[in-house]
Structure formats: C-alpha cells, structure tokens
Amino acid sequence: MFKRLLIANRGEIAVRIIRCCREMEIEPVAVYSTADREALHVQLASQAVCIGPPKAADSYLNMPNLLEAARATGCDAVHPGFGFLSENSEFARLCTECGLRFVGPPASVIDAMGNKAAARRLMKAHGVPVVPGSEGRVDTAEEAVRLAEQLGYPVLVKAAAGGGGRGMRRAYSADELPAAFRTAQAEALSCFGDGEMYLEKLIVNPRHIEFQILADSHGHVVHLGERDCSIQRKNQKLMEEAPSKALTPSLREAMGQAAVEAARAAGYQSAGTVEFVLDGQGHFYFIEMNTRIQVEHPVTEMVTGLDLIREQIRIAAGQPLSVKQEEVRLHGHAIECRINAEDPAADFRPGAGTVSFLHLPGGCGVRVDSALYTGCTLSPFYDSMIAKVIVHAPTRLEAIRRMRRALEELVVEGVATNAELAHLILYHPDYIKGAYDTGFIGQHLDELLKWSAAGKENP
Image (cartoon, rainbow, N blue to C red; front, side, top):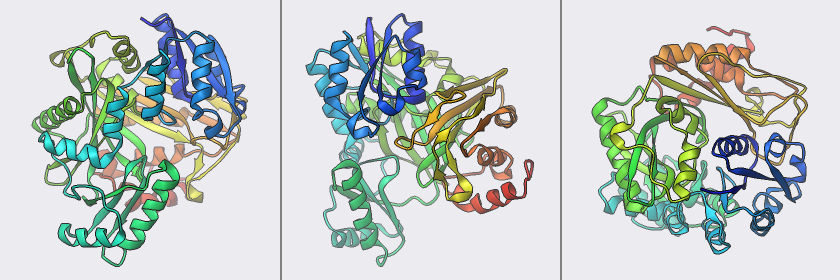
C-alpha cells in the first residue's frame, strides 16, 4: 500500500480523500492555490504545498507544479478527485512516467473513453445499446444538417471531448441546427481545446441513469447499482438518488450487465461510471463513461456500505476488489442534494464571499461532505458547489422526509445558496411520486420560484 498520496484537487473532494487516507494509514498531501491558503483541505492534510495563483490554469491545472509537489514531498501516488485533471490522459501518463501511481484508469483508457464519439463506436461494437447518431465526426454545420435529415429531429450536437454539459446544444429543426452546431463547437474549443463534434438523435426528456462500476487489474468487474440523476438544469445535476424508482429488477439487471460489458470493452480499471438515458418505453442507451470518481458517489456508498475512494486506492495499489458481484446488496434508499453558492432567483448567478455563520445538519442517516467552516471565504475562481447533503433511510419516502429535515437544519449565512430550491423540490408531487425526468426543472422552475417568493415551505 502507498505511504504518501498527493491529492491534486481542492474543496470537499480533497477533504473526502484526506479522510479516507487517514483511515488507511496513508499520509495525505494537499495542494493549494494562493486563494485556498486557509482552505479546510489544507488544514487537514499532513503536508500542503502551494502550487500557484488563484486561476485554475496556473494552479490546479498546472501539471509541472503538481508533479513537482508530489516529488518534493516523497509521494508515491496521486489522486485527481473529480474535475480539473481527473480525466486528463496526459496527466495520468506523466504521473506514470514520474514513478507515481495515478489513482484512476490507465491513460490509454482515458483517451478511449474521453472521446465521446470513439467511446460510442466502441460500445456499439460490443453490443451495448447506443443512441442513434453519426458513425464518426461531423466537421461542418452543413454535414450536420444532412445527417439530421436521416436521423429525424430533434437532434443533439455534442463535443467529442465534452463533459459536464459543455459543448452540447439541441436543435429541433434544420433552421436551428447550423447555429447550434457553431455555438457548441466554439464552446468545445474554448473549454476543451478540441472542436471535434458528433450528432445524436435527441431522446426528449429521458431519465438519466448511471451505473457505478469497479474494475481491478486482475480482471474483476462489478457494478454497484444505479443512481438516478434526472433532476438537473442545463445538463448540470442538482439531485441524485439510489435506487431509481424508474427501474424494474429485470431492467436493473440488464443495465447493470451492459455497464459491466462497457467497462470490459474499455479495459477499465478503477472506479468509473457508465451513463445511460432511459426513454419512456424502457429502452436504455449508452451516452458516455466517466473515468473518475463522481460527485454523487456518496449515494452509492450509502446504499452499498462500500467506501469507493478506498476501493480506488486499493485498485491503484494492485489489490483485487474487496467485493464480488454476488456480494453486492442495495440497502434502503439514499438521496443527495448538491448545495451550490448560487441564487436561483437571479438565474442561478454564482456568488462568492465569506461564510459568516455555518450550521451543518446531522442525526441518524445524514451525511454532509463539505469544506465549509464559519469564516471561510468562497473564491470566485472555482466551481460553485460548496456542500453535498446525503441522507439514507429504509424507504424512499422516509429518505425524502429525512432530507427535508436535514435541509431545514442547514444554515449558510453570508452567501446565497440553492438549498431552498432543493427543499421545495422535495415537496413537489411529481418528485414524491418519482414521476420525473430530465425536463423536470425546465417544466417546474417558475412554479418552484413562485413558491419560494411566496414563502411557501410546504406547498
């Protein structure tokens, strides 16, 4: 097992990894930008190294500085967390060349799965259902229009190197498609430095279902059930739950088997996520594979009892999985709410500032992953997510009630958050019934904001 591990990230995921390292008797080494000098992950680590100024490009994305920090502190492994360099094959390759174990899949797998168009072709070749679309890259808007006529509208323009909802636009007609293509391509070039695009038939308002997988270097692959991530805005997830109310036992088995096959086809190692869309007729389609730990991994941890960060580190150290497929059991129901420093009433405008007072919820079945503390400063340079509230209960209805109570206890003063919006969603009849899809926020946001403005905590 590793002696010392560098955490190439910040915020709550850095804190999460530090805690796991402590329990595994591995020394955690943090990195930080000058904006994060007083951050919680810096205070909790055994050592901390400043890697640059506030801008991510100069610090958390600065590969030479990260590798030098690992070398200078005598680390033998690097955990990238999520975001930043977690799916950067060049960084994974450089870690290996520097004698460091990258806690994630091999660089070749990141390359294969990072190009969404190539991943789609690989899955299709191995019998995993994929959304109808282009067989390869689409280079021009004119080419996209010709292909869309064959697929039928609506269609989805997607960046091959995309992720997180970026480099993606919908088009409902031939008139809309050229502008959608150019906008998506420009965003892809800006965000990923890669303008390769492809086209898919748009499955209108599906359920977004993802399966957590684990794969080691000994040929073992398991799935740990699904997470329903359909509560999202502009392709950004807001809430997740497990298991999904939309899946029957037979459908869960079929999708789980497809997820395992996808991981085997990719030669995967580490923790990863296979993402599907599920239409109203029970047909599911592969959309992408995330080659890293997910923001919403605690949902799966709550229903399985497994520590996914620990499994990642064990796999990176060459150890076999600690669980076999037949030993995986889902217990009860879990829900996660992402708490973002943003104002839903002002078009979700992100905010920064000082947290003047903080009270985190607790009690039976409640977990909070966060790097917040009273007096901490939220920087404008990074993602607006500041906490994740996760609950677990024997049934879905009990989990909903527990999450309502937890959010009522949450107090974050000094910055605006989306906590009230999440609380109101938990009272919406469609959410309570589980009758929702990816169109939920678009359909009900105005209604929810009116409830909020009226001060109606219990609609």
